[in-house]
Image 1 (spheres, rainbow, N blue to C red):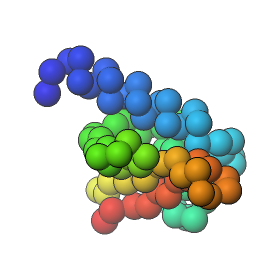
Image 2 (tube, rainbow, N blue to C red):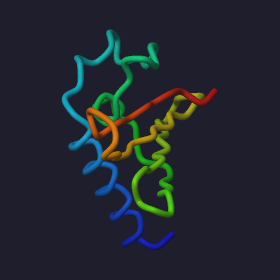
Image 3 (cartoon, rainbow, N blue to C red):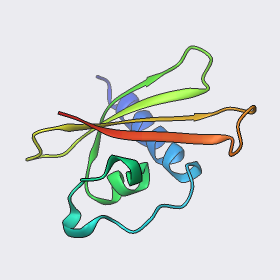
Length: 97
């Protein structure tokens, strides 16, 4: 992968995290345990790195894959924008084991 692509991917993930809304406090012990409360902000703050990125053809939703050195699983987040929903920005993060 070219360096420009890596920088753009990380910048995109941070931008999506910024528009995804306020996050609750990090889970106790810095461990990811409850998928329901997992947010992109928490994942980035807990030291996870962007491992991959895929956008939908119409650019309304994005999958972001995160990895963390030493972790035996990955985290995948879906973030998007839909004018027919309230709130319009949505996200869903979960562990891939």
